[in-house]
Structure formats: C-alpha cells, structure tokens
Image 1 (cartoon, rainbow, N blue to C red):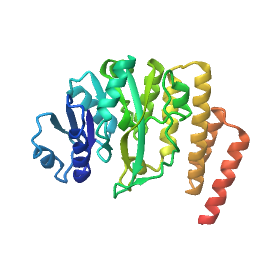
Image 2 (image 1 turned 90 degrees about the horizontal axis):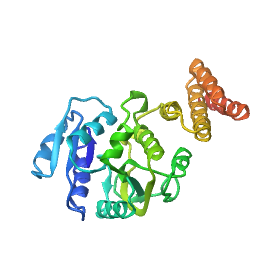
Image 3 (image 1 turned 45 degrees about the horizontal axis):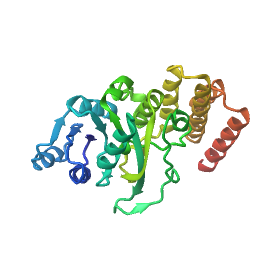
Image 4 (image 1 turned 90 degrees about the vertical axis):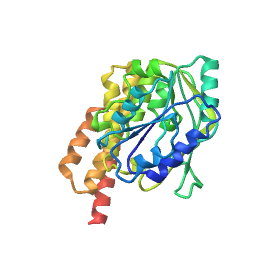
Length: 293
C-alpha cells in the first residue's frame, strides 16, 4: 500500500491507523512524505511499526511521482493506494483481494462514502455508487463507473504494463482517473459492492486546491485520445473534453480573461462540441461576469 502525504500529521495518522486495523494482515505500507515540516516524519517514526516504511523526499507537489516512488519501494504483488486524509474500512483488503483472486481479475475498485471534518457521513455529490465489472472503459469515460483512488487494487504486473501514474504536471488531481482509463483498456475490472473507503471532504482536500480543474480534466481526455482508442471511444472522449473546455471558457469569462476563454472555446469547437451548447456556455459566463462586476 502507498500513502503520499504533505503536512497532514494528524490526518495521516488516522489513515495509517485504518491500515493497521485491516483484518487482512499480510501487508506492507510505504508512506512517501513530500517534504512535510509539521512533524509528520517524527510521528510516523514514533509508531515503530516494522511493516511501515517511510520515504522522505524534498517537496515536489506531484502526487503521481510520489505514488510511483512508493510503488517502486514496495515488493507486494498487489498494490493499493490511500490518500492521507481518507480512511479504509477494516475489511477493505480482505474483501477485495479475496474476490480478485477468486474471479481471476487483475484490478478492481469498490464503494466509497464521503465524510466531513467531524468524520460524519455526508451525501455523495456524485450520486449513488454503482458497481460495474468487466470491460468498463466506456463507463469510466462517461463517469458511470465511479472509480476512486482509495478503492483501487491493482496487480503489480498490470500497473507496470500500464506505465504507472503519469507525472505530467497538467494532470495533477486527475492522474488517478487517467491511470484508470489505461487500466480499463488493458484488463477487465472487478467492482466490489461493499464500502471500502471513507473520503474526507474538507477545505484542504487536493481536489479543492485547483482552480483549473476543467483544463486538467480536458488534458486527461487528450492523453486518452493520443493513445488511439477505437473510434467510438475516441468520440466519447472528444465530446467529454469539449465539454470540459467549454466549462473552462465559462470560468475564464467570469474572471474577465477573454482571450483565454476564446482559446478554450476554439479548442472545444475543434473537438466536436455543439455550437448551441457553446453559445449557452458563453451566455451564462457573460451573465455571471456582469453580475459580479
């Protein structure tokens, strides 16, 4: 298992505790500290657990690199990932590994729930989790299959065949989704219906730290298109990319960055979005910009 972390000493200790509490006991945990200066290193060392390996690196802010570093430092046949602000349910590893081995699948994912700072369950903004197994690349592209990093379990050989996490800075925050797309092209997935992870929704969550989320998601679809998938999949990806670029344009208009908005709209048009939708986006953007003026 790999946990990347940066200046989350209290939260990462909760994440580690959820690993130690697993009913499946044959695990190794690699924690990759991205140059924390809040006592994270000392807190982890004080746990004195021989199954926990701490790697301390200079701060780079690239979670894909950190995760790849953790994978390289481990030796297990199966890989799992946990963000330092989330926690696993106690039977996560036991349930998932048993089913993967039983069904002969090389990767899988499972259910999740959101919690707040007080660890109380809150509504899932993405809707109800629906387990979808098999060749799920289309469902991943359309986000019908909700695959979260904390529920992933991957056979090491498949992870290596897929090329690991992509460290391109443009993909930070979407690097996990981009990997899942590549996994879904290579191998059938096994979806576990059980809840496997609790995701903490809070101000310091990584996904809340980027204002250009639509651009990053568009870049992810662009990488997928470059892999030359079948035409029907490429068409879906282009449509999704165009929608993200259009939303980015709307955000740029609201911030009065009109040149950037024009570029994003042009890119959206090239990738096949409907003109009516684009004009609607522009109109909403200008309306919001006027209201905020």
